[in-house]
Length: 296
Image (cartoon, rainbow, N blue to C red; front, top):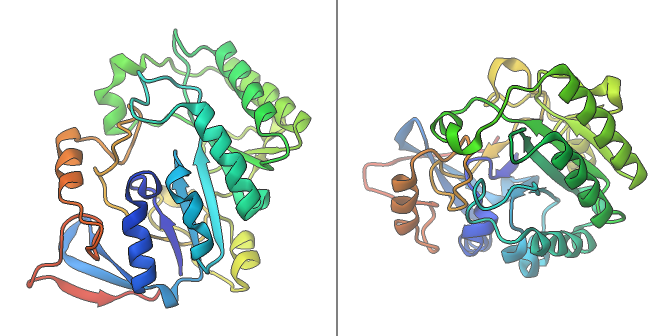
């Protein structure tokens, strides 16, 4: 089993103490988001590897050496300001944290996500081209792979449409992004790729890869994983099957484009109901809960 920590919230940024408590205790409980009475219990002895996804790796930097499992980090670094990402720390601090992280786990186990890309009157095409070149320059020698995705039509995106003020991308935009991003990545010894995107940019120099491919999973664990990630729609995602231990509506970054957090009141309530000593990320077990062990 490979854990995804997490695509539903930023556990590293806000709940590192809870995760480390769960790791040292040896198990974690996860409520089914569609049937809350059902709880999956995951023993870390059944976990082969962990994928951490975060916008802020700083809280876990001094604890990584306590984790005796193969790990991969995806760190999202965009050029957006506080109007789009209200509670993400200053990007300069994240860049320095990424450099430290790279020295700890190695650059081959670290992916930067420039994600999502959208174009607006404020965040223009030229703005992105300059920002991406600057990011590649800052992380030259620390990162070998950057993943790109484009803004999707989620509930939160529609709710924040006026703030985002994004325009529909045209073929000329895709071409400019593809060519310029590929050039910057190559110049700074990186590969740039997409995952789970309808628009194929390989003609402009992009690689087409998965967030966590079956090949990388085998390299990390020595095991063959036959299943693809069912959580992704329409069978277009070929990432290896993972188990997410996060909770929707619990991330306090409050990014305006986020698919996993669309109810700010619920986020605040979930944050209040978080107990770092609970086996669950939000709340505690109830006597009526049905707990089933999950091994894959």
